Image 1 (cartoon, rainbow, N blue to C red):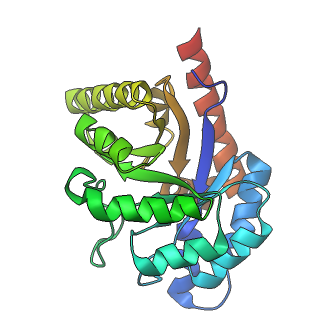
Image 2: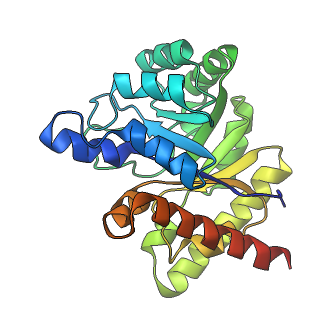
Length: 247
């Protein structure tokens, strides 16, 4: 089990609030700095094709100002590869992207798109960027991630978070099995999407996980608790779950 389960904070929806009215407030880069002060180990931002939340200047400022790793979520397009190669973030997480979706809906089908993804992964790695693939908890997709040269996967936790009762138990078991398989075949395994105070503990307890990425819930809770307190509370829940799992 990794000594510390890293927490990446996604600041996309600070930008969503800003863009709803226009102007510069609230500033997602300011939120990123506050997140780091509150205990975030890294910052995630998704530059979408339609720029619905994070904008190019946000990414440039994040790449220039952050003292912790920047995880650049992006579609596997030539435009995004060029931007990433110029900014050289610590990491790039390749995600599926459809313009009509509200948020990322499910993982990449790596197995069905191995050729193009292999080229994208190679281009990003050539720029010195660690590459991860956002995938479902499916051993076939993890095997495909290895085949295209990706060193990291991020397991989609949305199905687990949306499920209830026995269905949630089954989804958690799928995540745990996928994490074990990923680690066994040499992948670094992360997880994220939809996690909140109620759902994070069982996922954090999966010993093969190295990092969780959480955004929307934390930005929402910031309305009630403040962003720093929401992150500190999440950090505490993660560490408590990890400690129980290690005991």
